[in-house]
Length: 140
Image (cartoon, rainbow, N blue to C red; front, side, top):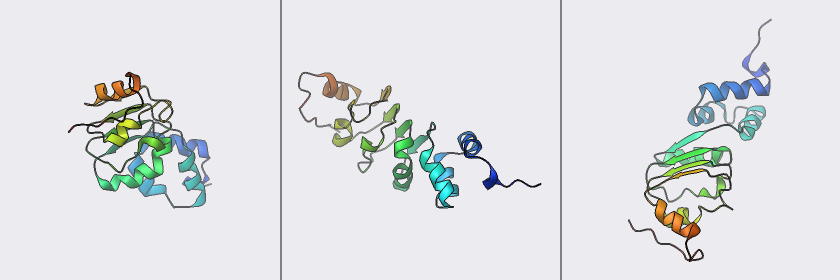
């Protein structure tokens, strides 16, 4: 008896995707394939590293933002809002915008454990400084 890929149970499919696929590969290979795969892709709670380097990655960000654990933004991407990354545990952001800096809050990113940025001190002051309500301006 032959077994085809679609006959595998959801748990095995998720394990396979976690092991062999990057978010880019998952999206381009399985999105809009059929309703079952769309449901599986939307429900995965895996460690997905998304490295944002160009505007084409915005589609991946939109698709995986609520499932992403680790995000690395290597350049200025002002259109990326951190508000949709509710499961984010690790954030590396090289040139954050004012909006991105102001959105790094415990209510916006409740699971954030690691933050790396040249603006880390500014973000720290924004979170824990005396003037928490003040809007910060990031000098470039």
